Length: 402
Image (cartoon, rainbow, N blue to C red; front, side):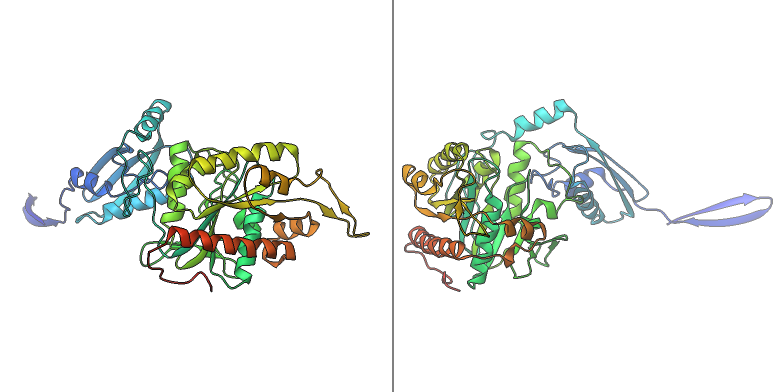
């Protein structure tokens, strides 16, 4: 509060003005240290994303440099910055603007994020998994199973959604994490739409399907599901970890993780970061698919991840008119392929026109057949044995049975 006297034409005028104390820019910077980039998961100050801070009469201006132009999570970052600054006393308003890092700056950031730059941080259970990588905990999830394939187009996401649907039908609590960031389809296939929200405890609440399957996918976070994900490796790695760890999955019997095809950064991150109980390999009768699936299998073996078995999708087509079996993609090879790789063969799923229709409608939970039911029964047995081996001698809070 300021007071003054102004004399003009014989009149004495007493004026008072209200002012705000100067906001310390260093205090603003300290508050921003607690803001994490939603893609990389590290402080925006440490990542040198804060480009400008100015303050005047309680009005604070902050400029942030994004790692990717038109970043789909830019609004989330802006909101986090604004909320952090508003906690400072005497702040009246906050304006946050964004720019984009140059190519040179991105290269420097990439070098900063390279594994080996930071020492390995051991997890709570003391399991280190390599430089800069931390094995995340399991919390209330009984069994975590990843679904992998050597190449795209073999129906891996369909197999994931069908296994989840059948497990849910059997009475289990099930979640699906869509880790295929560049080609996410789980939300569409399972008929889930809308935005996840934060629980009072701070965790992200996954969306649920009609039957109650919990789902988290990058498409549910993007403002526009058609926005391409053009993130670099370190960003992809961080997002996958966040989609798992920052989500409040609650108590689950099974969490199925749908991985992108191949042996890229995304599968490697899941193998290193998530406490997997096993993987399921999906193939198809084509020679090319059979040849490439061995790469995914060898990757899982190299990472010491147990392989629960192989599923052959689109194994054959049963003619709806005459009932004759047609080998559309060649003779089924699943059983022989599994044997040559030293894997259990879980079964072959036939082609069915109803699958494509129900997938497009988001009603895949309505589909079922005895073959998928048999695969799920075998999966339950193998997953239960795997969990027992990994937890031998440890107290189990709740049973695998629903």
